[in-house]
Length: 357
Image (tube, rainbow, N blue to C red):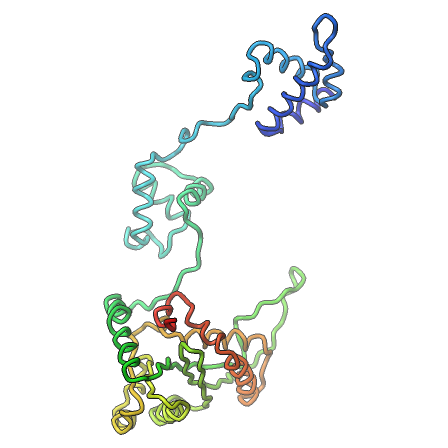
C-alpha cells in the first residue's frame, strides 16, 4: 500500500504535489503529539499518502518553512538540449518561407518534415529525427496544408496589374456608365463525380454506380457581386454563336449596360461573329478579359465548383436530360437567394471584386 501511494504521488503535477504537501503540513499541525512530534501514520491516512512522504515533507517544512514545500519545476531549462541554435533556427525558417525545395535543389515541390530535416543536415550537419522536426515546425508556426493550384504559365506581373490597375479602372468605368459587371464562365457537368465520400464498415468499400458511356452537358453562367445569376445549358461545344446568344440574353435581362468579364477562351475573342456583334451593340455591352491562366480570379469559378459539389449529392444519372434536370434544380436553388450568390465573392482570391458597401 505504501509503495502504491508513492507511485501515485510521483504521477502528480508539480502544483498538485505542492497542494498535497500543504495539506500534510496543515494536518500535521493539528495532530501533534504532546511531545511535539507528528502523528505520522494518522496524517498519512488522512492525506492518503505514504508515511515516508509525511516525514520528508514535515522535515522540509521544519528546515525551510513554506519555501521548502513549494512546487519545483522539473525538466530541462528552456532553451537547453535543443538541436539547433536560435541563429540556425532563424536561417531555416527564412529558407523554407522564401524558397521551395526545388529552388534549393532538394527533391520535392512542397516542404515536409523529411525535406526540412534534409535541409538542416545539409546546412548544419545536424541529424534531425522526423518526430523532432515536427516539434520544431509546430514551434515555428508551420502547419501541414493542402496547396493551392496555380498554372505554371501564369504571369505574376500581369496578375498584379489586373488587381491594382485594370480591374479598378473597369469598376470605375462601370460606375460612370451605370453598367452592371457580370463575371462569365463555362463548365462541364458529368453523370458521375469523384467528389463523393460515404461511411461503410471497415474493409467493405461502398459501391457507386457508373457507366462506361461518358455523359456530359455544358453550362455558361454569369454572376454579379449584387447577387444576380444568369445561366444557360447547352450540349454542343462552345462557339461564337453560342457565346453571342448568351450575351444577347444577358443584355435583355437588365435595363443597364453590361460589362462582361470572361477568360481568354479562343471563342471569347472571336473575330468572324463576335467582334462585329460587339461593335454593333457597343452601347449595350462591353467585354473584358481576365489575365491568362488565372481562373481563380473569376468569382463564377466558385459557382461552378459549388454546382459540381451539389451535383455529387444528386446520385447517378442515366442520360443527358437527367443530368440537366438535376443541374437546373441546383442552379435555381442557388439563384433564389442573392446572398448565396454574393458569397462566391467572399473567397480570398476574388474579394477584390466584392460589392463595395
